[in-house]
Length: 200
Image (cartoon, rainbow, N blue to C red; front, side):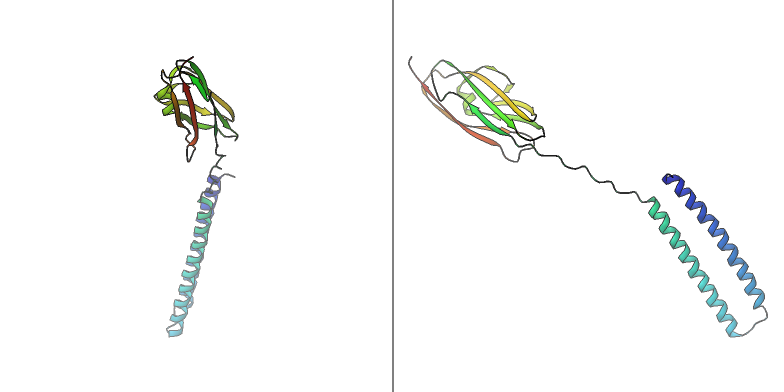
């Protein structure tokens, strides 16, 4: 039986109970009037008052009982909230030549590993020092400024590879590479250092 049908049944039963209860009260009131019509004693008045008070308490208790039944039937059953899923935790590994020559091309690979069963969203790799000193020739992912957009990272391994041209002057390029994603509480960082030598 659905909630609506149960509610209609309870309301109908309550109406019948009120009619039946009212009929009993009217009958008893009539009988009391007939019984004590000729009585002028104070005890008769006390009995009438006590009887009427008892009837009022009985009626109030009955209505309170039915009100509780209606409230319990109409109160919605709380539904449990969604169970939070696992939180992704990514790691970052960088593959690059530790030394190279000026005006040559090198390949730098960023390996993002997601060992969990959850997908990380909106992952980016920030490499400001590297991308400011090397010239981008090609990339497996979109680059905006000094940020490599990785996107969503499913469980497993995701690789972003860059082909870069080294600077035209010798020196050492050292900087921090940061991996960020929506679920992270702190960036995942790695240090990178490439020595650029002059001459052949």
